Image (cartoon, rainbow, N blue to C red; front, side):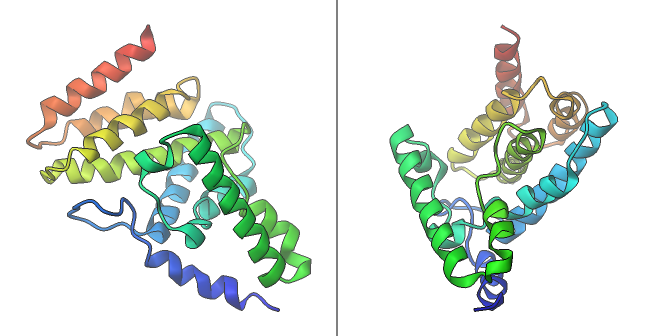
Length: 213
């Protein structure tokens, strides 16, 4: 038993497309998403560090790079389905946890098992790094959905995904990195010229106003 199965499995993440079942102008794989989330998390970590917070960079990078590895086992399930009920979400999480544990036990050399149990476990916890991951994941999802809206994709699901992504980001509005994103990054994104700009601006302002209540 060596690391071959793990290293070989990384290519599998390139073949798993995100938002399956919907028309899209641009395909995004789980592998590409993982890289982008790591880049976003790196930037958000910089903001937090400049705000005076201590970032465990090893933990942040491990969480970001590996956060969707378990989709290799069950694929990328549509967000509306995945979060349909708390019971279903828990069932899917239990399946992922079981398959991941079996994979680590059967395919990862014993001397590395503890490290991969940490890396492939649920990264979105209450630590600063876990919260940064939660935000970074939704920032990339917001950009993916924005890209489809900007191109004129008629599927209403991308507006729903944009709304859900921003609403989740706003749950972490106390974080310095989220405040920076809302003040400096999001307005620049929405300043882009596209046909549904006013509609998306209205939706964004509605969500922002709700958080002020």
